[in-house]
Image (cartoon, rainbow, N blue to C red; front, side, top):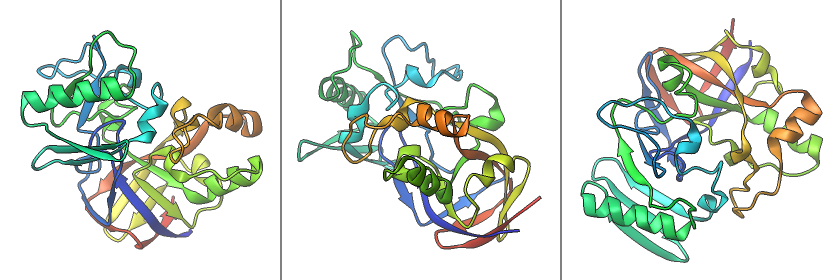
Length: 259
């Protein structure tokens, strides 16, 4: 067993846009982080139908995989009022996403600001309880999985490459301390227990080109997937976990790993 500590928690209300830090979260068995990736900007001709939602590959959305400049804007989204704030060029732009006018204005703003190559602006989409997670194409269970990052693994990779790697590159829901470096990758099937909450690790997280983008400079400065594969023989960092037992998680909360 290992004593673990939750260092940081985030949700991503709109796929591809800025994280929303969480100090506490109420988890329910079989479900993901409440409010996580329930909205997205689908690219032109994506094929997404809100009335018949089907999982799509991540590149069908406006995401860091294709648009490094996304890291250069900061966004806030209030899921209750559906007010979207985008800070770009030292100005804050506000869009009322409950209204079609606001959705169109926000889409046009992103299309222009990011220099999207698509012939038309993206479309703001949602279809609760559908989640726009990267692994939604795998299964319903994976659509509702929570991404967990072992900070010791990030630190070990930083030392290996002799460069500081910001954990934000990996856009995890939960960042942990207390596990040996990379031990999570060989612990699929094990459980992370925090009070009443039980998280079963169900899959390693294969990394894509989105992690190449420096979250502070918005530049592609490290070929993370290539470098992980070169030095470690795979392209994985972090794991996906399924909520097996419901309960409340808090930043700073201690827990343990067990088989």
